[in-house]
Image 1 (spheres, helix red, strand yellow):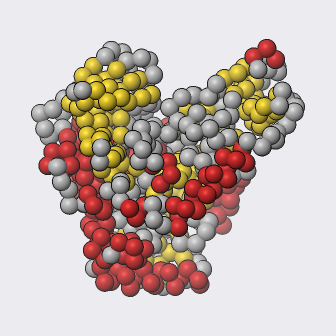
Image 2: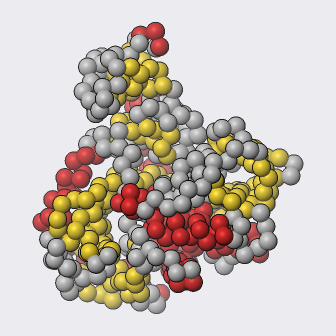
Image 3: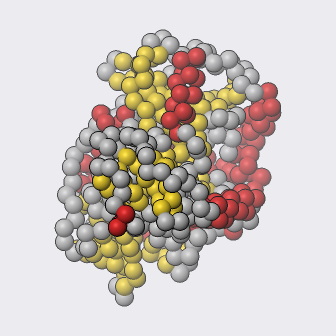
Length: 509
């Protein structure tokens, strides 16, 4: 998997792998922004806290984002107002502003060097039809006293627009540098962080919960916070039906002609996100978006050609220094799920469905969860309640689950190549003895053949040409070409049926 510019240039501290059975008061699964923020909030109590991470700190979605910290989440406030009322729409804004302030306070208090800067966020359109949506959003936000400014032009921005909304006092940073600094802070407060410790299961115990790791170690905990980007332990909350996975793409290049400082995103499709970044006196342009549902693209590599064309046609840039992709989970009603996993399991907490705005949302998730744990209430708990009825009763829920069922059935139809004549770097579905498998040949000529039935709920996987991975179009699980897990909710790797320098050993299938 291609690492992001943030990860490549900021390795951070190393933390040990859990190599023994252990007990704790609070267990946080995931050492990204949500997990580290939650550890920070809970560390104010004199309690034992453990954070476990399947990879390294900040190597998941949190280290692969744009680094935008904002309450301006696209045209969201009108839709929330219509569905849940003006009070909750305003509360959504207040929550994200509080999350932004928490990050700002942490950066300032601990002097974390993460290229943090306050800049405005812009939502713009080049399309006449979308202009109506922007104007309607602006009217709603006027009622809600959300301080958007309506613009006909963005100064020092080379893209000609029809209209835009500007929200001041937002921020951007280097997310990996920030997480490395925050991990040091929580570690200094007595929080134990374990890397390369994937979790493979959770069971209820008379004193709480027992969490199992892939290397057969157990963690006993009274309270568990699932702070990974997807919910691998469901408790019949059916979260895989209430959110869907999206892939999006980013590039970074040197910016040879300065533009307005800030963060920019359009309304129409394809989605385009742009932001400035300055490090050691050098200006960069981060450009991307062009999102699609996971497992729903025939040529991921071509997307980067489109991004580069867009960047070169609108900005004065140098060569593309790095390109990467990331995965986000979208709640069916576009409001994240934060709180108790279910009424029956009040001591398991989740935070998921961040709708591509996981930075401010990760901070507010830590505030909501820590308030629920320590005070048994939060002023935001109803807004983000994972069990809210509105997340089921909407057209998006019905549409997405119809699509999931279609993808499951379609994947069972026997199609694929009978040939194992696969070029280096190529992956495709092959049929062997009437059954479908996934075959990939690496740059050294070694062939990997895996069972491409997703270990989550049995959907058939699709090859991702950019990441060289097998992606699930139903619920977003992703696997490396050798079968190892890249993204959940799957907890088990794919069965590796064979690997060799030439063709698959027929005795293995």
